[in-house]
Image (spheres, rainbow, N blue to C red):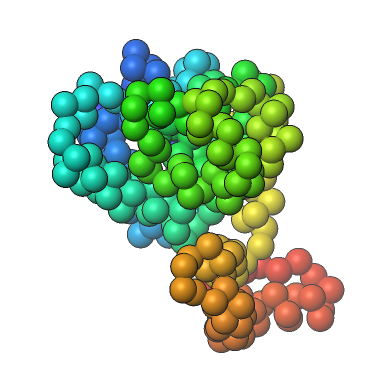
Length: 260
């Protein structure tokens, strides 16, 4: 599929999606959000894709925020629709994606950029990364899940401070806050992410998908995550991967998962 604002590269079952608007510091406009949705939807249906890595083009920015020019004159109703549509099409879609999504955060991840990184299943940052939710400095609040996912990751107090001050933290502080899992040099960022992806792919991708659903259930209102875990655990016994995994263990050989 051809896109105007993103690039795709599929290699060894790893799909790298690069947001490619360097002159705008990869800011998210409506078209880019739609293209990202389309790319993730296609990846969901593509059996060749086992893992998705999302990053930004260039060295300056992962995503420097939303494209403010698009909504500066919005009414309250339009603003609510903007947030609801974006969350449905991209941010919640990524958070609940059935295949692992790794954010490789290079440079600025601000506003919608940090919200996109937080929607990924985990994050790796380059040593030049800067992260923040500066929306209150514009007279608005984070609208793509930032007020919900940031406290889940860093705790309520730190999230309150970051959002209310509209300040940025650097990569090492993000690591200290548990906002990112690893910090590496910029030149090593994608290779490091691919290395983790390769480790994941040695396992049953069916089981990995089930684990994603069970973990996410803990953060859904009105859902008992333990019940979801029990159900997913039980369903695993009916998979070809379970048969292969247990057989390989008992016969002291490496598993060759069919991912079914």
